[in-house]
Amino acid sequence: MDKRLGVIGIIVEDIRNAQEVNQILHNFSDIIVGRMGIPHKERQVSVISLIVDGPMDSISAMTGKLGNIKSVSVKSAISKK
Image (tube, rainbow, N blue to C red; front, side, top):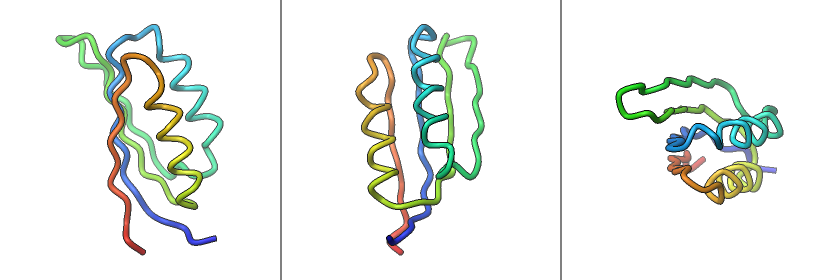
């Protein structure tokens, strides 16, 4: 299967959803190359950035599951090759 490299940005607007976000990220840990999470205390949100390397199906499945969580926003940029 063709692997792609990508950057995914996640904003968690309700910290009560953090456990669900972390569980999904754990389930897809095989495609996550790097992760940085920063709590933005002033706005009371958490920002997570991911570097991923894996099949497009896996990347799409992960971002889809994350995007279905209430108060979670997800955006991605994926390589063409």
